[in-house]
Amino acid sequence: MHPIIKLIAQRFTLGILLLVAASVLIFGLTEALPGDAAQAVLGQAATPENLANLREEMGLNRPATTRYFEWFGGILQGDMGVSIINRLDIAESVGKRLGNTLFLAFWAAIVSVPLAIFLGLLAVRYRNRWPDKLISGVTLTTISIPEFLIGYVLVYFLAVKLGFGSALAMVNDDMPLWQKLQSIVLPVMVLTLVVLAHMMRMTRAAILNVMQSAYIETAELKGLSVFNVIAKHAFPNAVSPIVNVVMLNLAYLVVGVVVIEVVFVYPGMGQFLVDAVTKRDVPVVLACGVIFAAIYIGLNMLADIISILANPRLRHPK
Image 1 (tube, rainbow, N blue to C red):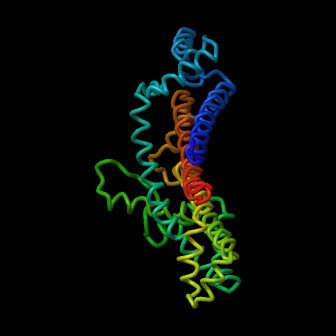
Image 2: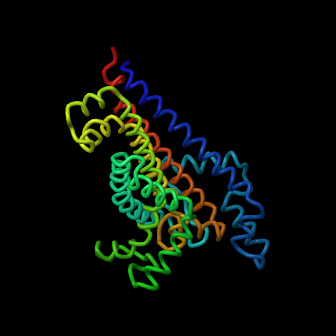
Image 3: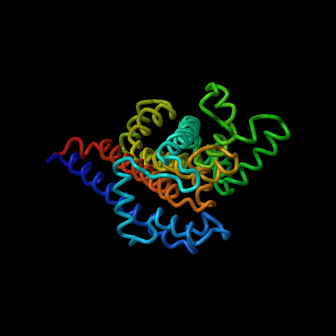
């Protein structure tokens, strides 16, 4: 078997095992929550008959292992169950919310990834000079500040004081694209500031590592400009670690938007999950948790596969 195919198969198998392990952990954590889930849903005024009926419906009278296999088996078949609170199909509700979260993450990635790579190249071009120090200082400052604080600061100064953007990032299917983009300007700015530093620093470090190679010195001796050497010779050979960190941050953009969605009241998966936790809607919490885990594991697995394909030693084994 070709080494690349073997490694990809190993990564894919590992990803499946990690997803199963994550589902067990998510289910176990919901089981370990204190209190009675049925009581939390119905409230203190619920009658014993109503509590007994809801416990039966939620399967709380059956062993946890039985309920786990029924739940995970349904997930594999696309059946996420029904919400306890509003009796709506979870898959349908999640589909709309996930679409909103992916929309926000997509535009944040469109802004942050090219900007991070450009700033990384610029930092290498002016290494140890004031542009490099300025870029590093500003990006490290933004990553050190809690994202919710960045969000509130931008809302106050941009939305409230200057009238730029919207403090509430509300979107729906009937809105035209330009109006949706206007609504998510501030959340996209916050997410960009949060992930920019990590991607920029990794881009800078990866390119500087390649710049120590002999062929870079040869390119410089040919009289090529510094930026051409960096962009055409160093950057293509530093793609593998850069792709890894980009994929990790893309996973964060999808999975880690919970705080941002709550700050801007954005109707995405994060807000949906927080509402479900507050109302103790266990089936919704389980569905959101396993979807987030699948996205995070999937993007990390994709990063590993791209790194394998980008490795010339594996593409052309001796």
